[in-house]
Image (cartoon, rainbow, N blue to C red):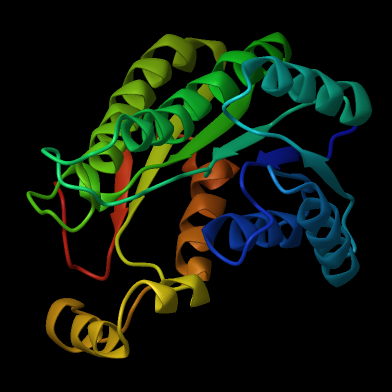
Length: 252
């Protein structure tokens, strides 16, 4: 078994948090497995960060809502790389609809991707970590799990709150086995896709009136925190959820 750590990141081939995390973990010297539901984009991004970082990067298509596929991919990664050290559950979905008007499709899709997908990856990744006696899992939640606000959508907020609870219990179960489980709760993190949802003045107002650091978060901000939690310097940290919102929603 190689000593080089292996990290798997879900929904990592887009333009947001997942892709920044995958790139950062490669820069940290890990072998990175980029998974995404979009097969072509998955392969292309894996090749891109491999060229940038000089690390081995695998691109493996995976829909986190397909439990059988998740189980197969976890086995494929361990067969190919010999180990699984870091799992980052980043896949997410949100469609904001009021509870009184929400379609069942929106509710079920939010829970399937945001919560069930996280569970499937942990369910089928953890046995490999238990077998090797070490590992670190970082789940991406949201400040929407804490806030009393209509901004995030109830299905998304409910699923992300459940991810925090899942994180705490999994940390308690697996800490004695050498595995740490933590979560990160981002606030507004910019990517170009958001321009299709919000007007330009939304971003200016957010940076000026809500963020205590005078700017909107970038995917790399989250990637740096995940890098720390995934690594050995965070060896005494488990069961925690860390907010990263520029002070918009500090949580203690």
